[in-house]
Length: 206
Image (cartoon, rainbow, N blue to C red; front, side, top):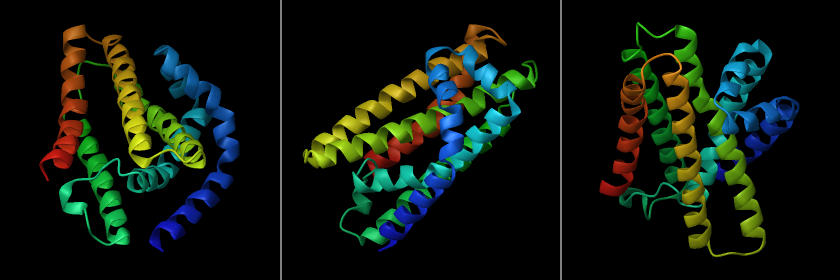
């Protein structure tokens, strides 16, 4: 019941924001190809605002896909009521976002230009939107042709890993444009490896 209600909310939200998505979709794709496109997107007030709104709107659909296909399925969530499992999935992802935000505030570099740091940090919004759209498309198409859910889950996890790896590369390039490569790598480790490593560990250990 909860899944259906949230799915309906996601569809209505997507319809309302469809125009914004169409408007910035070419920029989103360009950001996956060249890191400088992230700088251009951030320089546009309208495009960056549309991107931020879409990223927020994509949180719910992403959690629904994650729950539906078991992309995050630690042992403690197995065998519980589907609505509670979905609520826990949303809670875990919300906690992940809060941890990322906290770390971002704590390790903010003083020698790097604020604009460069902000561009690198908000690149996560861009790649999150791209990832969510791809996962939604994969889930719809692969379910329509009646592929096994284990195959769908494996394919989604592989695609998620590839998109995340590409995101880290682009973020490293943006950081490296404002500081040394070594410093950029250290920032990347603190900002990405720690929170994401904790999320993966929670899925494996618990």
